[in-house]
Length: 400
Ligand SMILES: Cc1cc2nc3c(=O)[nH]c(=O)nc-3n(C[C@H](O)[C@H](O)[C@H](O)COP(=O)(O)OP(=O)(O)OC[C@H]3O[C@@H](n4cnc5c(N)ncnc54)[C@H](O)[C@@H]3O)c2cc1C
Image (cartoon, rainbow, N blue to C red):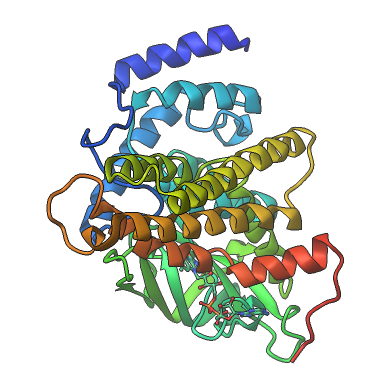
């Protein structure tokens, strides 16, 4: 389909179902003073947001804009990444629900289901995930397996056509509103740790699954611990070969790393603009230290943008995501941390209690959310290890 016809169709859909965004250019004291990045929301607020997002997703999917680049056999539109970009650009001019609750589901788990799932898994879930009927979570981390993910101890034992899973997962984002999860389990405890793992799709509502929310330091409760007690999974829900779960997990992790490539998923742009406003409004625009530090974070943010363009180029050339993707995550978290540090200096004590003043207390959410971004999706140290060893060819870290 040519792009002009496609855009006409997209505009008709958006005009019918969404409102054009009113001028929301940022100005001190004007409108929402949320800074960006991870947001601190209660479980209830998240559930409400998810319900709204699901309704929008179904609408978009049924109109042919829910999965523009996806294969037609699973309900995708089979169009190019260019069509997708055009639609997203157009949509950004409209007020539509926040679709962040689909990031892990569609950005990480669904590609893994397509790459490693059985026909049954693909037929049963891929379309419904993209339509927003279902949402998937990532059940990898455990109390004893985070950076060293291959140490996963959750056991899956075969019982005829089924597997019986026992163990505990932790830090599972969105487990409380998701329907299925990609769970990494140990199936051969005697094999070397990377070789005895198997991945499955688990029904989050199955008997034996218990989900408990965990409160975060920013006040939100968006992730959970998940207990699996005798949970039965049919063998058709295995992702990849038995004991080859590491390969499956890598597909998910690579997708995770590339999520930050070229897109402002962390809200850096808005945070920079909010910081600039605070500096000007609080009378610090002539302070040489503040100017110097602001120039530094501004340059860091711009560099992320240019790296993103390089990533786009690689994607267009068909280069699959690899270890280089770690640089996006690292650059984003370094920038967020530098912004948070400068904002703390600029806004000072006004950040610690809500006086009702615009653009001051709202920084507390950003500053208390930033440390989590350095840990989630692989810590900064792990990103540095990957870049050092697999991109720069430095010697491997000693195995202790
Ligand atoms: C906001 C958030 C959302 C998350 N969502 C999910 C999710 O949806 N699903 C999921 O499965 N997990 C999720 N996680 C978990 C996340 O993947 C882990 O927290 C992360 O991998 C680190 O593991 P850990 O917490 O066990 O820390 P550890 O691995 O115990 O690390 C502790 C410290 O030691 C350092 N360290 C460890 N190994 C090395 C090494 N080899 N070299 C140098 N330093 C090292 C680390 O960098 C860190 O500073 C989430 C975490 C956060 C914060």
